Length: 310
Ligand code: ZN
Image 1 (cartoon, rainbow, N blue to C red):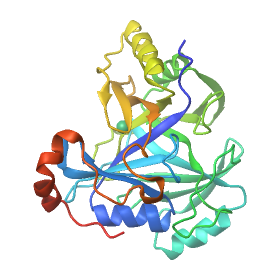
Image 2 (image 1 turned 180 degrees about the vertical axis):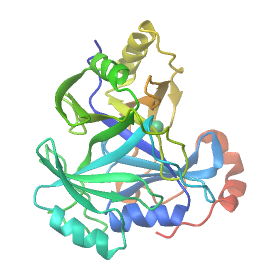
Image 3 (image 1 turned 60 degrees about the horizontal axis):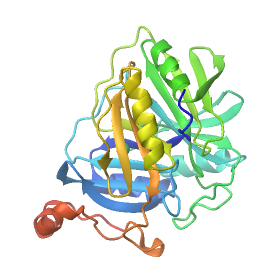
Image 4 (image 1 turned 90 degrees about the vertical axis):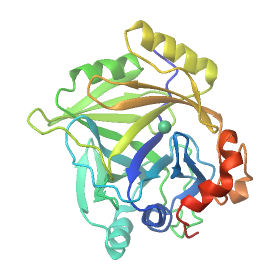
């Protein structure tokens, strides 16, 4: 069994409009934009990262805003809900705040003893705020949401699957422990993690398959401490028959990817070197950062990208 996985590292989704996306995550959810770069495989598209002050692994929501992109269709074989942890007692604030900003899909629920507020992102993304203990995490308050309500980082994610069994087995192999089941949803928790430590598997055998588009999660990344741990995980996954990519340098972490039996694309990402490797903490996310190989084309790349309001 793998013992190096510490919870979530980041969640990467697709969006239509870059400015709408940026405004939602900074001004509405109060996260900090910690990096403005491009899709390393398609530099005509931004890659925007939002998180806590320094983009601590387990807090980082990232987007590829493709511009004119049709919305995805929700269904099985995807991450259905990305869940953020917020302080206990803050959901009243959030309900007023989100509805005041015109956010749709607001619904209060309880699951696994936790109070949740579900809502839709700007492209119909499935989100929930979950009241949680801080577990050593501090919200970013630079965008006007107070420390009493600010997002700590991720709580976890809920996958929607036609058959959850094989994904449950994989999570167990990855070091998660099966916890309770409520209705069609079974919770898995990784002990000793970074607080972004739950994965809920919702089994929906009769639902249609998801179709990816704006508002869909592209992949979900799990955190490992360093490159040595990542190689151990890669070896262990390959020994059980998973097709895992070679290690890819993403400038702010190293990444490997593999497709899981339920259809969700997994990444394993390192906590090193982090988002402050090429910018001062005080100015994270302000300047357009490019991987070295694109620097010679900076002028052309910048001219092709829409301007994003601060
Ligand atoms: Zn990723």
